[in-house]
Image (cartoon, rainbow, N blue to C red):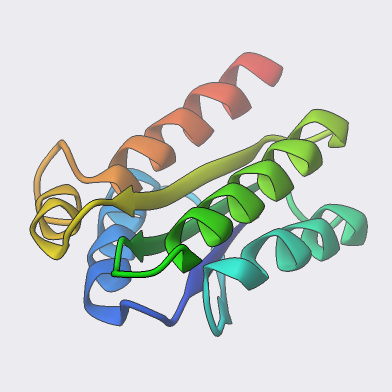
Amino acid sequence: MIAVIISEFNKEIVDGLLEGCKKSLKDHKLNIIKVPGAFELPASAQKCVESERYDAVITLGCVIKGDTDHYDYICQAVSNGIMNISIKSHIPVLFGVLTCQNAQQAFERSRDNDFNKGFEVGNAAKSLLESAR
């Protein structure tokens, strides 16, 4: 089973990422876990890894640059948090978080096509799981 952790912030974009991920992993059982925002993704990913219930963990979220430094802090915290979990994990932990300069970029990466970041991360998870067998 694969844990797919999704941020509820920027919901419309993240829903597109989730649909792309589901499309890619249609032959796999998924457990969808919701968290409030991207900042909560690493903690939830760590819990999933520690539970030993999953073959892989996928994180999906979206952070869009605004007028303050908040974007920079959140992007850095989330990417470093997920990277650290991935390095220490015995299972694949994948980063499917969009970090975009504007909403248009985010919508482009969450559309129903092969450039959907969720679809790409789902394919990466499949590849990693197949190579581990």
